[in-house]
Length: 381
Image (cartoon, rainbow, N blue to C red; front, top):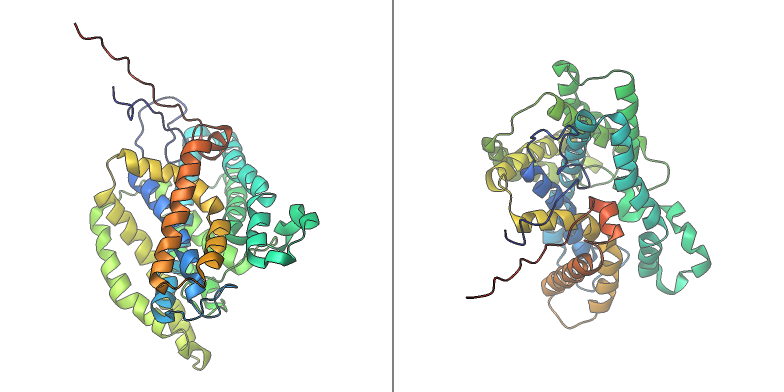
């Protein structure tokens, strides 16, 4: 047996690797694990190039090539977290069915609530220090999270949505009425039309008290994901075709209407409609694409998927420190962005392999891992 086959892969952040409690055979959704990982890793790239967009980040490059990165920011932000929350709802429903409500609650407490609590006194203070520098006060170290969860806001919102899911399950909701749950697709337009930030996609909200608009927006994707699993929709490769109109037509229109929306009564609502259409088309299109390219298990894809949680938790402080470091270097701005992404990712992957994967931290984030066993070498005759 190869060393790769000797390694076990239990439950990941959103339960993608879980098996039924009965031990019966059950498919693993390799494509959704990979898509979830890509959604998280895109956040690293997004935060790495924000300093190249004027007025988008506390750290500002002196001569930013703004246009291309402004478009990239909108293109990524418009679908990344909707995809993530849809998959989170999908895997939450899967865990409920396979393990029951009590085990689902315990799983979410271990994989989401506990890491977030620890990050409040580790990642968030270090990230605050990276942003404010000399203004950082060590005495306030345990309390900086009260001002906001920074990039970890999604864990806080996910806990709220999981609590709502548990409550609805207790009330007997089964996600079985198609008309009711399909209504979530257009319903997301309601919070979208009430958003204020001039960006494709939802507003940003990282506060201790969740924004009802932002929470409602992501709830539509989360609960549709639960419905998606409970109704046993078959994922199709041809869904990838949705990416073509999303990227070629819908996104350009949504993006073009952003700033006319400030001056025109009709441009804002039209942009909102196209933004919502873009988010849903990208969700289904990416599921189809990953069904096409990632449905089969590959060791390196699984490894990246497993490591993505750790990488996302710690990337922001390192990104900010790296941006400050390279700010005045005599290098092309695009090269600086690539350098930041490459070095930060390499450092975090190294720390994951050496200090996380087979430790208590790795068990907390992804479940227990067993180191590959070396095969005995047969003595030659």
